[in-house]
Length: 177
Length: 412
Image (cartoon, rainbow over all chains, first blue to last red; front, side):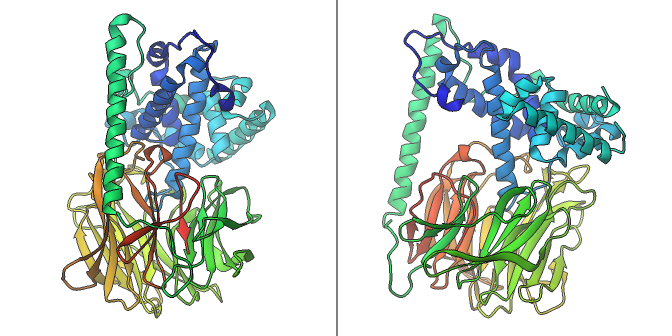
């Protein structure tokens, strides 16, 4: 899909309303990145980079019905993957997966009661694709088709990743779902 | 919805709510475009800023070129030349063997059948074209493999190393092989969240028998709780009698030991050396070779005779969020490769200087047999750009022919 988007825009193509996309979805995208990378400064950096790239592609994205939101989500997920891979490879950074929000503020910590921490710890231990599928499904509420588009995988893979991820999560937190 | 789904939805939403709209920082450098004519001036300024940025980048590149004015391609043949091949992880996550002189790929290391492959890293070389590599799966199980590169640059004998299956949820951050390849030193960190598992340790594996000895970190400095000790580099003396390690006390761990939450006050970085023949113990007991306030000591390798350390220093400002990954390049700074006496005071001898970014990291720094140093410097993510990939000898940087603008670990 990215290759197709990289083509020249037709003359007079309408420009993407990046300002609207930013106003409506910036917070949502930062929150999505936070849930995937685990710390807020990185989440904000990832989304900043996505908007910088969107600015360069606004003409190509203008014709999209969703105003570029699906592309932005896809780019955020890809950016998070890149960060996680580099973070795990970097020889100085601990490869521990951080829990979203725990290091940000006292308020953030208060929001995460022990029960929620347990769930997030179990989620962070899942393989990357299952974690991504569960976050897109249960945080953003995306459909299987939308998740498949965002992650670039088939709907069947989304279904199986979700089922296996939920089963693993249930085992980790001691439930029979 | 099942109970699990309910709990997951609740936990995700609670975590997401820790970010609120008013607390978000505005977009930097790339404000959202506006449509009305009044904002055309803003757009023009944005273009001017982009042009100015490009000019600054060109200036920095020019400075780098002027400082490393004697850049040249690697020589081939003769004494003191670098190893004929090096092994590196490319941006496609493939582990490839390349000819040092030409950059041509001579072989690709086949992925071992070891669970769901995640990636190869880190790497270590024994100097006789024997290499060690950790293979990590997505479920954070890690195993070290060994292979050889033939005189023709082909991979042969890829097999699990005896004693190379790492403890559950522990991954190697750094590895170094003794010059004769008989021992492999591995620094370990937790591979995923684990309560009370914030300590670092060094494991030395006998590569013939698989026997292991372990050194672990000691007590936190006075007044600090749950510190995070990071081991940045391991290196051996030529006779294999000492193993040097660069350790940095980074910061305090988070409430569940999950991340750094604040830089440590009076933090320091030090290089120590241990005797691998002893049967393990505390990392604090190693012979102190160098100690300095924390400030960008990125790599330190002991010389073959153990009398000095070759260090790489990249001055940097410490982030208020030291556990966070930096995704934007910092301001330019002078990186210095210098040799300092080990265990005694004395003047540093500068081997090389290079303009780099404060956010750049030294990903590989490998001493070679003839006194060269393989060096790979890049940002944490590809967004930061500016990779230095080559080897330093006789005050010169010899760039390695490499088709990508980013690379990960390398060894030779």
